Amino acid sequence: MKIAIGCDHGGINLKPVLIDYLEKKGVEYVDFGCYDKTSTDYNEYALKVANAVANGECDKGILFCGTGIGMSIVANKVKGIRCGHCHDVFSAKMTRLHNDANVMALGERVVGPGLMLEIVDAFIFTDFSGDERHARRVQKIKDLEEKSFK
Ligand code: RB5
Image 1 (tube, rainbow, N blue to C red):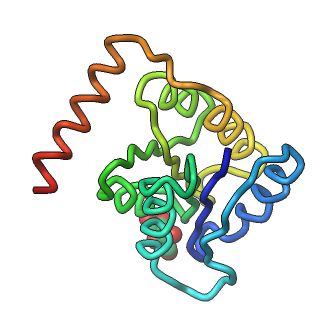
Image 2: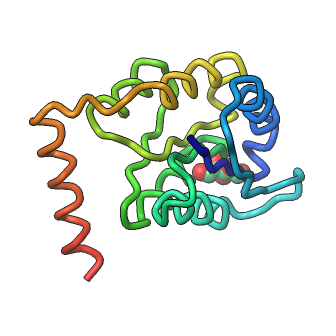
């Protein structure tokens, strides 16, 4: 499994914590920036991570900004991306089980590093349930994308 990761200056402190966790778990990752605390636009990093997941370079993506909101809005504009905005373990698990989310966005000004790792763990290691009703709803999202992006 390969994870695309990205942040803006508002999420820069969570990224090294995530990298340390991924390395300890032996999970591959690609770091799409940013790399310092200079004020920057979340749009750029959300797009890089979302594109890497949409084009198959990475299996899943994790994004950090101050709130996770800007990142999730941008990621969800990319065709093929279902980005969950999750600040609790239950939501992270459910966005995998029910929505087959392939990207997750979190806010560094909302959660601390300990909770973030528990949320990430649920996101990375929970599989899509595959239940017919959830597969049907995910397919409807994909159908809508086909119409919206024409
Ligand atoms: C940056 O101040 C902040 O707006 C950004 O990190 C994010 O929270 C936007 O949604």
